[in-house]
Length: 156
Image 1 (cartoon, rainbow, N blue to C red):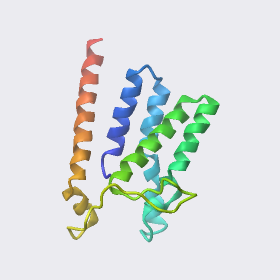
Image 2 (cartoon, rainbow, N blue to C red):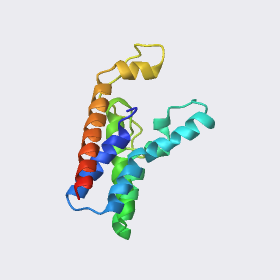
Image 3 (cartoon, rainbow, N blue to C red):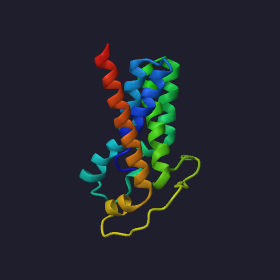
Image 4 (cartoon, helix red, strand yellow):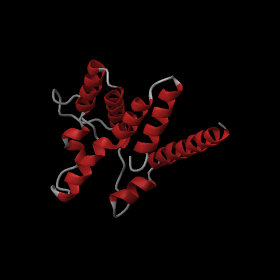
């Protein structure tokens, strides 16, 4: 997933708001939807791309389940949202990126599809794969929902 995490988080958060959930929960989902990829800073500036960033702790679903559980125990909507957003991120990454759902008990990573190296650069290979159309669709739906929400805000 290259561009779809935040738009998917936005849609998920808006859906939760439609169910009556709080604004802190919505904002937490937005933060959680991109938080696992903050490891890209370490990946580029410290590891210099030596290992795939999906092997870092930030891409372990147990981390985000723990954040969610902590938020539920502490009754903090923002923390609950961060946990939910992080889990959403893991689910989206599982489409075409390997995620170790059973870690620390099992090391095996799960990916629903494999994106073959069809171009010189991996980003171009991802953009040429059908899964990128899923991301484009998520982005288009999020843009539409945002546009509709902004129209409703102007009417009130």
